Image (tube, rainbow, N blue to C red; front, side, top):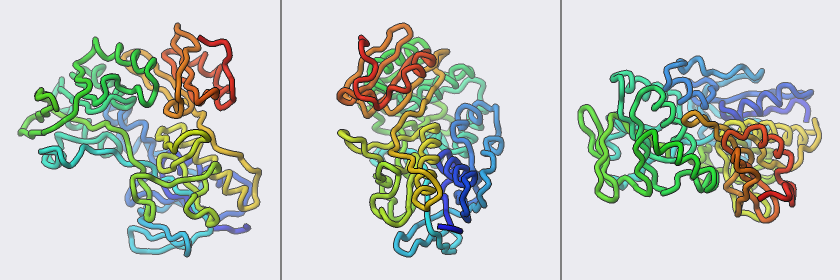
Length: 394
């Protein structure tokens, strides 16, 4: 379709990758990239690594221009029938195709927890998702040379943040609902080694949940489900994310997509979704969602390639399968992964020194995780999603 008007909605990894892919294609497109009102596209991986650590100001995490026309006006709703966007400013805009890459929002504590709202209002309880969150945590930490920070969660972001704060001289405390934090997302072998890294470094309350919060002038007190009281200068919620989509997909379930990232709810309307907002279905497995930077980048590029194909400008990119790598630095060690470990139904060790684990769905490896195993992991990467790959492993 010559001269097609295309809207990319979202200024994170997926949106920027989609816009860049469309802009550099040999296609006649009128391309516009929408971000939230008053916001620029930013690299969210730098919230804790850069802003909290005091190495960067939020404006220094702005992403390079994609070549698309940039509009900072939050998209509130999309009407698939009329192909119209409803914007925060009140304006309505019509397009021929859409890539929705609005990402995720932080999962909060239950509203049933006594004292939650007061703690959020006071700033003693916060999330660590946006650049504003990062600046808030940084400014709180600047009020003391050694703060006690309670981190609610045990996943990769919680673990990385605990490590960064410990290295900066703060006292980090992990409070996790699981007795083996991270096992559901990276598998038990890697989660056990991760826990071994944490235990000598700081206190950890495992298999516990928050029941009540008291906010004081200079600190916060959390009462756990076993009656234990834990005090700190600041508490950070790191319980993962929920999909963040415009209407009519505003529920926490996100936007279901087919293998080429087309919206299942409007399959013929040239609406695509990528990144933390997209809900995928792997053959032989239930639905899943991935919310990390490199995978969102890969999804954004894949959605753009699928759109270009559907408009008659390129080849079919084929089905999307998660193969992107991710890594976090935790207490001097590097945990690396590829694919989506939660898709696996079993694990097997490909090596023990360094630790490298394959996550299998039946006989098909769908992910890899390892500790200080970047080289071996990349050697095995081509075998992901190939039935009966990696034979002879222990």
